[in-house]
Amino acid sequence: MNGTGYLHRPSSVGILACELYIPSLYVEQSKLETHENISKGKYTIGLGQQRMSICSDHEDICSLCLTVLSRLLDETGVHPQQIGRLDVGTETLIDKAKSIKTVLMQLFVDHDNTAVEGVDNVNACYGGTAAIFNAIHWIESSFWDGRYAVVVMGDIAVYPKGNARPTGGAGACALLIGPNAPVVFESGCRATHMAHVYDFYKPNFNSLYPVVDGQLSVQCVISALDTCYTQFCTKSQMNHESQSHTHASTLTSREVNLSTFAAVLFHTPYVKLAQKSLARLYLNDLIRACPYIPSTITDKYKNLDIRTLVNDKELEREMIEQSRELYEQKTLPGVYFAQNMGNMYTPSVYYSLFSFLISQPNEEQLYGRRILLFSYGSGLASSMYSVVCRKVHECRFTLAQLQRSIQRARERLDQERMEISPEIMDKILLEREENQNKVPFVPKQPNEVLKLGDIYLKSIDKHYRRSYDKFASNDNSERDMHNTTHVQQLYTDYFQNRQTIGDV
Image 1 (spheres, rainbow, N blue to C red):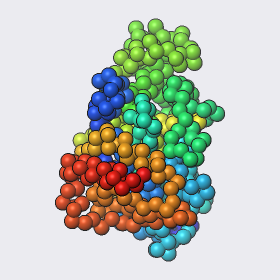
Image 2: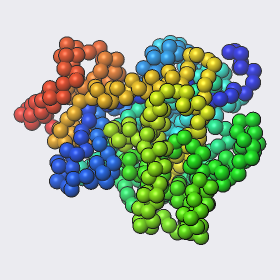
Image 3: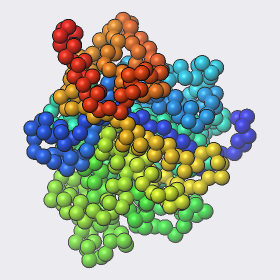
Image 4: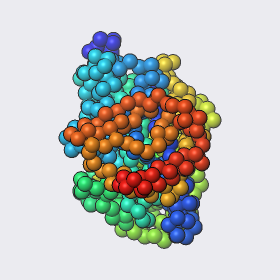
């Protein structure tokens, strides 16, 4: 470019700012247990989930992404002309040709900026990570023109009625990516494992629901963890040896282990899987006889072949118990959003990062700390990589500002959502299923679930063209925004009226 003065390779590329989308509706997992007439604790303890986000018919994947991107630009003050790349990660497809990124371009075209690279990235829950990698690669390439990149990722995860339904959820986030960031993706520290499997896939374009082999999917996650962790430790050693100015050059592969990181965070479709994932990495460290584990413990495991232990449930329970303290220190602080929103697919691992970043009392405790991330998408694609928190001298984007943005989302999560009953949830999801591919279509559910400034689905015409608008609020929604009883009654009346007039 370099019209902005960058005459050298940019450094410290990472997350400058973020904005999170919190759906207004949720259902309690404990009430789902009662509703489904199953044993108490199956969802709340067995899966580790507390609440699950639900989207109304005013919300589709484009409205979520439009809202979170619009708010990112508003909150940061970044002008749309300052964005040179926009990548989207999602598996919630509404069109087999037109990308969601092109829908988001309406926020840029009005500001005379059509020179925005990037399109959608699709591979189950991995698309958001692919989008981030693409954004970073652009900034670090000879094609970078000095402008910011933005990554938007989001999904609406829904399952048919039955034991898979509690693993649903919804969420979206927008990340501003650029140099001199407070959260930096470490160069050279990335491991990837990809393979061809049918553990989770969506071959039926007329259905909202995936085809899932749950047992195979967990096995694939475990195998991907083993492969990525071994590869990551080797690459991390090589990286530190070649860049001694960043970290100590005397590190060996054995010294890169769970004790190296302030946090170890995972793609979290449900919390119990994150605990199993940490336990699996701990088993890897046991077999490697890492020095933070007493030799009296490692001696028992040093001759094990980890490749043969994917399905050993007794060993898994043993590892979960042995690694419990590590889990509580390094992984549990990162599960709050996932535990209370459910499975978000592409943004899942980044909501884990957000949770951890606000779990610390102040940003000073995070400076210089490394965080290990594992991203997984069925089919399969997976990567393990690390980020470092740093103090920046550019006051516009700081770690403290990043934390404040996440904290605002946490407050919306805790204070502004509205609970619905499992019965109403079932009806909302059934209606979403019935309206799949229906045209023309106009959302009719109560608009009290929308917040001021939300961009919502206005209509779909007979040619499947979707239009959106920004919600300006009205007297009723403003007055009753936080009244769960009122919203529950509104939905009860809505479905009763539908039944009366035969609108099905």
